[in-house]
Structure formats: structure tokens, C-alpha cells
Image (cartoon, rainbow, N blue to C red):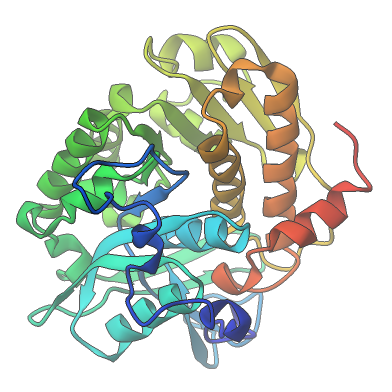
Length: 361
């Protein structure tokens, strides 16, 4: 993030119509009131904020000489990532009626993400986060949300029609921390589920935002059994299982794989990912690159696999095709760490395929 403020993808933005719901129009009901067969639209729900990152690397927040702003928020990153890969995506969330909030809405539009589900709050600011990767390799966060606009999204502000059009409805756990956003999140899940959407969950643990570790564990697990697809990291396995071995398949299957789950994915950074379904399990190795900034790698991975699944919802049933899709997702994550920032570094489909020419499943 330190090398740029935000992306201006003029080639992609030129494809946007003046109506911010141009993507949704591709999957809207027909003129007679009937509905077309569901498209491959992925609707991402949750937070979008401004990250402030040091202008130099390897320092703590207190040591940073200056900061630059960049768009952030995992669900928004995923929405942009899917669009970059040529997919259809939309974002639902709330920002402040301020310069930063409108900047974020414009960034989504420039990246061909349907932002018609965004709401603006005149009485709360867009969330801010200061984040750095210290010299010891640990990430350091400081959030300004007291409360921020994303926490104030209400159920009656949801774009239910947009949610109903989702082939996949993707979300995290940060929107579960406070009311009224928690109730809006639960209502959105119910709408998506009743409409036949696939529910995709990436907890994206951010402990500093929760009142306590116990509250985080309880909140994250409160909607666990609703999801069809779950992506977690090794660290999140340890946290959710109270310190159990994240590499033990029995721990994952007994404690985290619920009966209705279609696909559970565990990311292992540069080492790739593990996958678990009711029929099989395995691992797909990572794509080796020279890492510059790991910000957004997990979101890029999620973008890659959801783009594939949205186009073929039965993909998880065929192990060979699933492995190919996961290698594609691994390459998405790998390419993202070769540049600074999340959204600025998210790759195109062409860039991913070029890297994959050198790799075999």
C-alpha cells in the first residue's frame, strides 16, 4: 500500500455506465417481471475503509515518519478481486457521507464493481485503520471506529433485490461485532439463503476490534453452521479451537467441518492451501514469488476461488477441477504479494494465467 493511494484503472472504468448498478443490470429481472437464471454474480457484504500505511517498511506505527492512504476492507477487496479476474461482483456496506466515503465508492466503480448497495451515513465517519508490517514480521493495527459508518448499517437499508441476485453471498465477521450492523448481517444471510445463494464466509479475525478473545470466538462461531464455503487461516484454526494443532486434519474435520459445509479451505501463506469436502481432502502447493507486501493475499485467494465457483457451482465435487481452481486461487494470492497494497495489487485473469503456464497441478 505504501507506494500508492488508490487505483485508477481507466480502461476498466471506461466500461462502467453512468448508472452505478450497471453490473446488477446484467442479472436483473426481465421486463415482464420474470427472472433470468441466476448469473455468476458474487455479492460481498461488510466493511470498506481507509488504510493508512507507513511510507517506509519495517517500522512500528509510532516509528513511521508519514502515512499514505489506501482503500481497505476484506469484503471490498474480494469484490474488486473478482472483477479484476473478469467476474461479476457487487459490494454492500456503509461508509460516511464524507470525502473518504465517496472516494471508496468511486474506487469500486472504477474497478467495475456494482456499488449500488452502498449506503452513506451523514452522522458517522468512514472507518480508518493504521496498519504496518513491523521489522519482526508482525502486523500492527490501530482502528478508528467509535462508531464508524460501517458499524451502523441497518436492516432496512439493505438492497434485498441485489442480495437475491447473488449466486454467491460472501462476508466476514467484523460486521458481527456491533449492532445494528450485526442484525443487518444476519438478515442479509437469510435473504441470500432463501434465494438459493451459496454462503461464503471468511472470518478474517481482527482481535483488536472485538471486546475480548472470548467474544470474538463466540461471534465468529455464531454463524459458522450457516456457511456453505469457509476459508480460514492456520492462525484462525488455533484461535477457534483454543490452541489445537492447525495442521491436524482430525482437528479441522471434527471441530470445524459442520454437516452442511460444502468446502472448507485452509490457507497456508506461501505453502498453498488445504481443502476439505465430504468426499475428499488434500493440499495444493503455493506459487513461489518474491514477496513485497502480504496485505490482501488472503482476499485475492478468496477472489480466485469464488470467481471459479460462481461460474461452476459443482466445482467442489470434482477433485481434479477443484485442485486446478485452487492453484488458480493460490496464484492470485501470490501475485498480490509482489506489489504493495491490496486493491492496487490484485491481479487480472491474464496475469494469473501467465504465471500458471510455469506451474502444474
